[in-house]
Image (cartoon, rainbow, N blue to C red):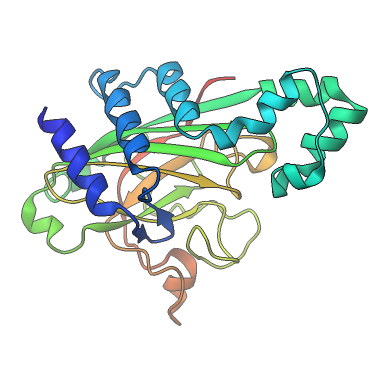
Length: 275
């Protein structure tokens, strides 16, 4: 009951706000998201989510993400371009008409990855984060992310900042802790930004609000990061930084490189769960 209370209060406070480019629940879908989150939490066992159950709930909560998939798999009917998602007109119309088998195969292939966040032992005196991140994507569709993170950091550490940079780093070797010298995944060799910046690293996911003593749940989509192809983030590390991400808007070199987020204090490796 206490966990549910934290979630309800947290989502209510986040309603209609945005944190470093990541959008929280709006008034219209807040109730649906809260219901989904509470049901998802009921599947948790020591932060090990049952991926299939959570994925099903995610798709039920956000049906607009799978409209084209349902149309494609239901008789390969074509639709006017105006009815198709703006970023998916080819799959949704032309491929269904010219090559329905390919369309069907693409949309039935959904990849799901998970990442179990743990605090770097070197920083346990100041920070204590734990949680689970689930990522899912159908080929040609946006990446969907849901995360549940518990912040049990000492209060004095969290007084410095409750906003923390949330980035995908290039490498997934965390045998000796979260790699301090690793950088955001940036195959395009561009400057740092927020998740909704026109110029950004593939691994730039902005900030997350992690209030001390609370469990935070958030969902978002990304059209840049992917679970497919040579730009895939599978096998790379997902990190929580000690400081707030400035979005690369300052003139100093570190802002353009990392957003002045400081060292990574918690991390995990993004691993493929099933496809």
